[in-house]
Image 1 (tube, rainbow, N blue to C red):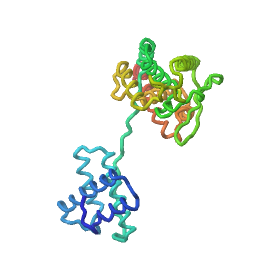
Image 2 (spheres, helix red, strand yellow):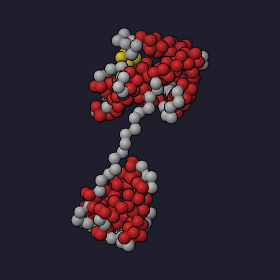
Image 3 (cartoon, one colour):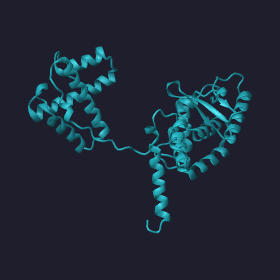
Image 4 (tube, rainbow, N blue to C red):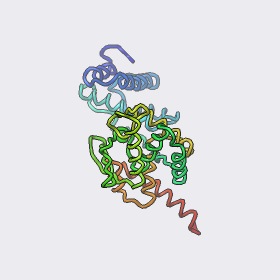
Length: 300
């Protein structure tokens, strides 16, 4: 990171550090991008004058990264650094206009969410039934069963309290992002599983923490505990690259869509604020339709 007082990079970094109060990690990332860019300008165009920088210079710098195999997401981060840098210097009066107006960001291809196939899900549930002999394996059964049946986020499930489970209405009240409440209907089978867990918890611990799921010591489950259990059992039941609790949230949504659930209903169940976040699951449904068409249609 250049430390010479008064340079365009240093004045911008000082702004980030003292006025915006960005973290050290964020500032280092900005400084690294800008230092790389100005080194490129010096070697390729023999200039470091901010007033002489053109859109073409910027595009040639970015093109080198793309041709070298850098992902669009990483290139877009560098574009973001430059946009902030030039915007700052426009406000300071160093330049009259930004060269970024003619620089387009590369499109990021959306990766479809990974999910567990239905036959693998059934095999997973059978394995959980057979292994629930101690408190840890019982927790694995509870975690995976609730994740798959409700589509909850990890943070939502770990914070779920006993009183949020309403057996009389067959529903669970979930507190999601921004303290936004939503209601998720649950099956009699899952309710019975929860009731049995609550009964065992009351018998096992004289005083457990005020949450539904607890560790072997009666303490609230922590994220790594839950992640490791889910990862272990998903690894035994499927060949997925990712084996996290979030995969079960994707599985919940994908299986609903594959069986004809309304997109808006899935949005509400997942607690998405925007329908755009839920629409990714339609792609998996379309892929399933394509596969069925290819197998069944004589002209496919």
